[in-house]
Length: 190
Image 1 (cartoon, rainbow, N blue to C red):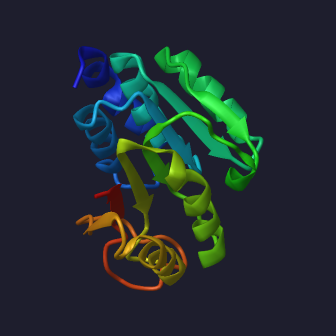
Image 2: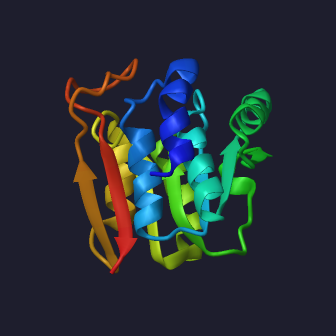
């Protein structure tokens, strides 16, 4: 991780009070670095910790990070992140399915609460634009049946590889359907 990341990581975690475990942000940073991502997209902003992590990656490695959220109030959060940490996160307001991407996506992080059909619509829209090295990372895979069902229906079998990672010590989401870790699903083309 860059010196700027080391200098500000704990400060960002302290200020943003991530609802995700603190390891998801660094995980995304290093995953983007591993695949040498040029374009990262985050759907659903939450408190901004993953926006910070991917925005910092973009700064450190001359990439571009886009965030999408239907909540216009998240614009101020992104502006504050950009100003406070000298980032250049691109914020887009609206439903994720309203966006038409024409550029290859190297890392897509999906962290929303929605129906199975919401997730499947997002996957149908963004999957064709994933680069050859592209990864789709979905949060809360183990906690919500609708997320698990959508990921499994879309990506199990066919030309995809699906890896699921339970995250030890992760706090439970309100309304989570199980008591285990919420974890992540990671998808790539084979």
